[in-house]
Image 1 (cartoon, rainbow, N blue to C red):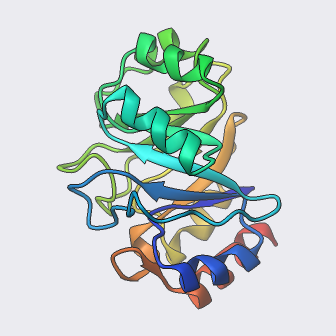
Image 2 (tube, one colour):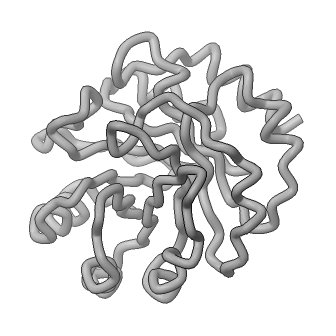
Length: 203
């Protein structure tokens, strides 16, 4: 099971988390977020960890600038970005993760137009904010997903979620995405809790 830790910002915290065997680090470029990453700061590179830049309805020129300057591997699009928007970023060489906010009435058919321009989808909980709501959606809804694009699972996943994740048998589940439930404060993660969670999930 691959792991993404999102909403990182503090250099010492990032360095510690890089040693936990995770696969993706997420950096949020959204001014309304309490985890917003400084556009003037550099993002360190680590072997075997992909860098993900998170954006919400951003101007495409800004996204491309961050992609190039920060040497980002994947662009995670958390707003109402359309297929053409994704396609333009894909042509620039970026990996694309398109986010869909899932509520009880979510129709997975709306993901299908994006299949040709996205490397992954990410299913998060529908809430007041674009992400980081700290709420789990009904994972049984994912049994209705029948597309070929693998996905990240996000939304309120915390230390207590291990057994529920292990009980999932979803062919296209690629990675678990964690954020707010492992925080001591916005953008600073509890390394001890993360280490325990990752160990329990993978053993």
